Image (cartoon, rainbow, N blue to C red; front, top):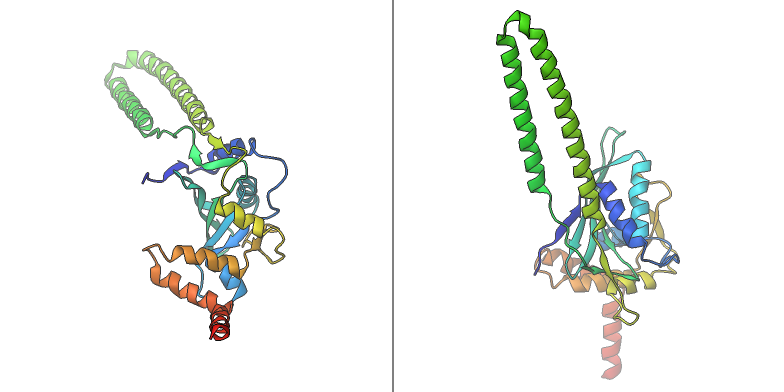
Length: 288
């Protein structure tokens, strides 16, 4: 299995990638609000449900950009944010934001699965390349400049008094040229980074294709009236997925080795609340 890949860990870069995806989508929204799933949604329905750790959402690329912009407009700030690509799986936005003006500095963790009706987010056309080697080269160049600057300063101090002004003048000229060169290199690096980000493209769906489960969940939640608001974000509503959808999602998760006991416990509770056992008993009694 191919490892997940972090496409961007800066909200501006992430917005660029998402906006490029949005260009290939219809203007008609798939659903009006993101959909809240997971233990947070279960807790909304069931007060006695265990305390959730984060906010799990399903959202369109447009809704995800609105979420990012809403955080930036509010009193909150991103503590960390990553756009992660799972080859053959899709895109996920994960991270944390924090209220920077309160004493308790409450941290909100989020995990957003992106869903598109027109763009196949499971298949990326081009693979994003890490620029770490280029960054190391830039750092080494800056170290060389610093060493050379210090060397020149030492020579100036050791020079004769009648030559000092001329040497300092020459050094200032060199330093100015060095700064200009570094600034130009920095601008080139930013331009290259933008080019790399803009190269990230995803395949479009064919006219006839199997419908993804995440897309089906959004369609099933279109007319759900239960809604809640994300913390610290005024007027950013999300639909709360109904218990039957939460039960179906939890059923798929019990096959994961990680957190098996937690998932199976959640599943049992959801099925009890949905009266699945009662339905099973009634079916057995009618067949006897």
